[in-house]
Image (cartoon, rainbow, N blue to C red; front, side, top):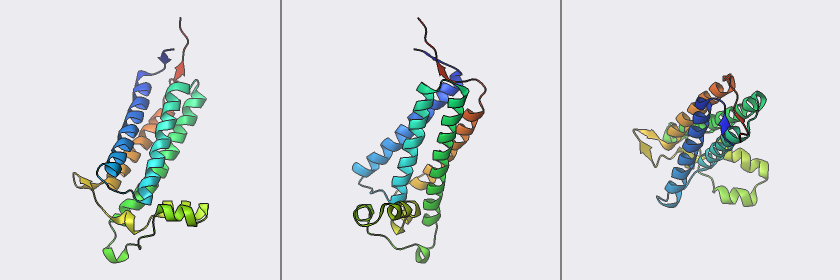
Length: 174
């Protein structure tokens, strides 16, 4: 079953999937090989990257109409916008003066075991002092800053996908 529709759309969706896979892969590499423990906001951003990738994959293989194309590109946009909010919060925390940084919390495992679910979600989106630490930089930008840029890129691309005129679909050919 070859994919039909715009080559640019397919290439764009594949690029989103590859980018998200690479970003998540590198995040796990830094966690398990470089031993950089992710903060609550980092974990939340990973979740939103995962959603962007899943929706892009669905758009690539399951979008059979303009309605599906618009729906899935909207979900990509919503996920990337939530990621923008989370990454922006972390970048903001990282740029606070040291005396304004919130205190570090006990850690995600403690929150999950001892806090109600909605309170844990609130803490995941709010972050704590751990989120203000900058342990990694590339070209002068922290991992949170790069994450913010990548989420903005995905959001812009999802808007383009929403307004594309040709539709992505699967065509059965013999």
